[in-house]
Image (cartoon, rainbow, N blue to C red; front, top):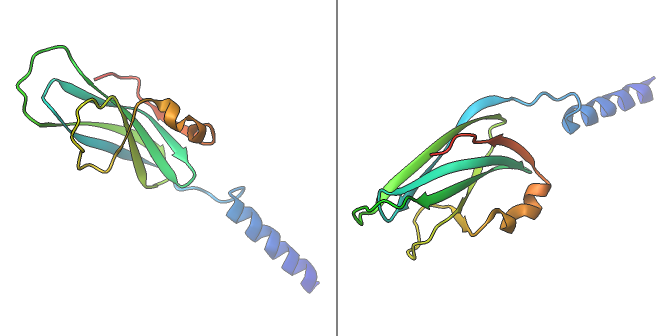
Length: 132
């Protein structure tokens, strides 16, 4: 009888910790990015958010319009709402062409291909259908 209770308790613990019975706390969160750029002609857009293990990866695109602008360092931003568990966010930015090193803690990449192998093992949480 004691053996059955112990086995039942172990099965219950395994199932609840594996997520089969465990309920994740899903809420809607804002993910934002603020980036210093060379001038006000630049825009930024959070394109996708992925869950990779215990992190959220936000992939953003930064680009400059063809309009003339005063060369003045400007901060641009974008925000997207995601419904997921609260996890730390890691930002990847595509499209940087200026030479200075930004102070923001983001990773600048040439294309999403650089992180594609990690994305293949993750889960897409959100895709931005709007463009800035």
